[in-house]
Length: 445
Figure 1 (spheres, one colour):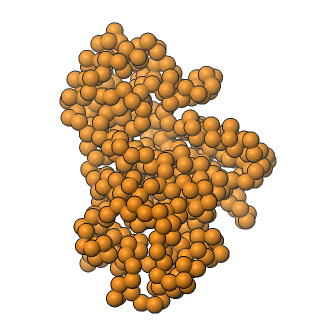
Figure 2 (cartoon, helix red, strand yellow):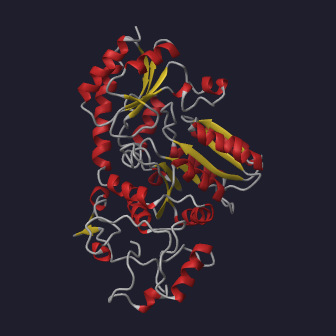
Figure 3 (cartoon, rainbow, N blue to C red):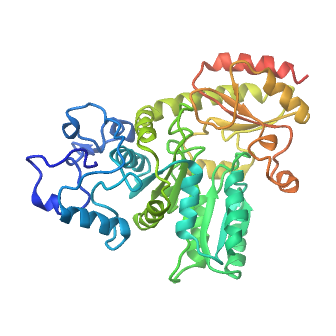
């Protein structure tokens, strides 16, 4: 998709002066005989032409800080795009703070999964979220969000943006359309509602948000207004395989690509994808503050995207087997797993929004911190580590780790208790994992 090499005999002067849109190596094959190709197929070559890189089957890593322009006119036009003088971003490669071949190929492939207009890569999931908020929120605005959110996201909204007069209001992840509407309406009275920010399922409680209800209430309350707050959703836990929020009316999706998309616990990355107008605004902010992903990590992400469907499918199958076993164990108080919806409301949201239950869930043990720690310390196959979505099974204690900074009263309200253990199932043998959990539960009592 990107300008991997300099002028070739087939390159025309219109391309060199930037008279076309962002130059692609050749039209990609997106369908065959009227059949639209699936993302799993497109991950193997979409956005990349080996002929532009000495015939290399896979994209090389482009470890360069700056790129040579084909002509002075092309350089001017590229900078017009980067600086916003001309909309749409750069039509060519300029400097690695703005774009690069590895990043652009990966962005094209990431957009395929959710049929998004465009996508952007970032140095981490939090840099994707922070850049998005900085691009779309103004001092004095109000952010409406579902609760709970990842602790760092809540801190960014409440503590950091709060310094600039940004306010926030929230509603429980499983709220009804009427309850969501009441919160949004109250937020309208406080100031300009910059966005409605969602996380579904919520981290770490695993409760789903009704995206369609949020869209319906937003459209009703802001009908005819010049500013309609975009709906932004963190889709890390289920996407892009089991949940596609853009198809349900969301405007922008953000990711910690460190998780399932990266999938090997060996890279840190973030993403944002969705409607072109929003992506363009976020790209301008990324260009300014330099939160783009580095080329080596983008190259590793390309490797991971090729097996994303295989890895997520295996992990999801394993999780279904493990959770079915765990819920019958005497040491277990409850399991919050999407395959066992807690009530009719969650079942309805799951049926309408999801194609799979995922592989990350919350396990509540009988007892408290001591029992949780005993269980975690006894694990032999599963690793005691934060994060999720890797090929290996991970287990952690949210109250004492990822959500330690959340005030005690808020943790209590959100059911983030001392007896909660968060588990992300990997690609090991399911029966081996069950054996590991069985012996670890013996340590609980």
